[in-house]
Image (tube, rainbow, N blue to C red; front, side, top):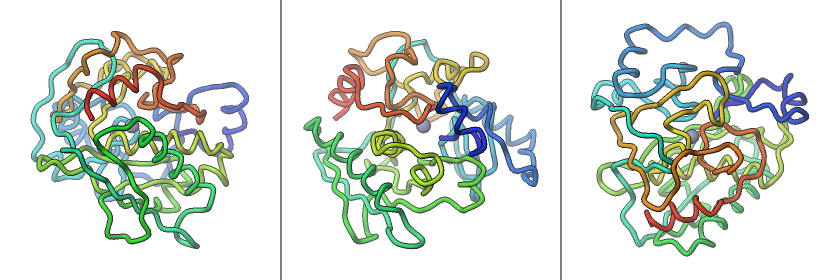
Length: 272
Ligand SMILES: [Zn+2]
């Protein structure tokens, strides 16, 4: 996920303006993403709007990390209808406990960030799903959080994740900003929403407004396509996402607290 640079945060929070990749400020030293790469991303069905270089690959859809390898093996995507709540083809096989580790201390996360993580975990566990999350103090965990680079934190990246493997495992790494509290002043609930969003990708959730990111991100209509990883409508969830429904899996965040709404709960319950 991305948000506006810190100079604009006061405006964002005061005016309720949604921050997104379209509006994000990007370090001018960034090399532009090549046309060849953009056309690969497009042929997978992802939007090419706001794609940035990230780590050893690219961030698409605000927070999905695609490596060069992902790009080289991806299937061609197809556009799908405008319904709410989507999952990838690969899901985590349950019942099982997914352990989560986030470092603390100088190079890790503040107490406020960890409180957000714990709240995100508690929200999932309160749904009595076949998946249970548990925070552990060993880095030998199913999902490991690592701090973004200072450069990425400064340029407004909030977090990144990916989708489950084809062997039933959750995506194993969430790269997360450590400054959601200290620089952006988000509440514990706001932090839990963003962390819970990245955890949602790790267990196979795509963006609620995946068929039209402009619902939460503003800007022009943009269908992300199925990205070659699948975008399967989850039965029982309504057609047409709205920003007002405040799903935790909307593509863009305004930094507010978005606990699971009824449709989110239906979707979680259906998958797990
Ligand atoms: Zn996302």
